[in-house]
Image (cartoon, rainbow, N blue to C red; front, side, top):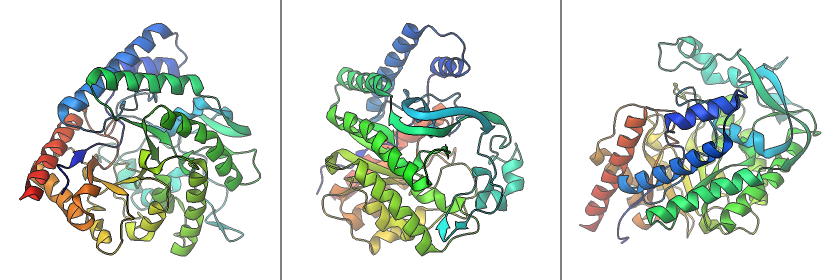
Length: 405
């Protein structure tokens, strides 16, 4: 029996107001004293690492503070950090969630193609709720035009200085907090989202992204950190295909994206890699999410040692039963979410413990690390986010006590 259930989270944590303001100013092209910004960023990372330790989180991150977001609530697409780190992109003015395609794009010559974000099936079914600013499910104005990248040249990695800064800040924070292990978030190729006007196909763009992003992956591993691959597209692409595709077609479409990711991970140690899958994590009904049972084997095909996924979200909590029939490969671990970013209610520690115990009894307690469904930064108020992490730690302690009996 494992000594105790360890705790972690998915990566994003609430940013300090000053850091949010600095990022917003830089994004708007306002003059920012860079040396002061870098000092504030390093100090913020050190503080958030120490606070995770003090809250009872065992495997911590930098809160993704080096990945800029404009504000704490209108957090925008989380993957946008990569825009400044890839060459071959040009910024153009387009709607935030993409131009609607000129014609239905569910299949083209037998191939699956993604519609715009605004045409998601869930968003279409509940358009009234998503459009109502008082509903709690409202989304940013899909017609609002903002600068977005378009691929108009060869994709190459050019974010070495920013990456080195972020790695150094996390390592300094870990050392100051007396911690050894920290994880670092990086984008998976399938979740790199921008329009393609250069490569002959979207699949060619996918493989180019895999080669470029490999540079991030290698650098993180070489720095002695745990690499977390953020890849919600593996699950949420399903909802972005109109009309609903056949499951076998979607699996074939997804398998190519797993192959590209594994190509990018070639030669890297799986035990230092964790893979995060979710269903997009926006606050909404999610009735058109693909079931976990349809993609769990695809998730396990990623050459990672640990797998993170939503397990507290009320649309997916019941799917713990999948592991009654699916065997976890030897040497792999599960990082199920046991507190959710989708509700302001703070989970009771005993409920957290119950959720942990379900997985521990199915795959073995030594193969379970208690986590969150998705990133908490920007999804709930900072006070609530930290209270959720406290409940996570308390629930893991309860589960550990119950497993020892």
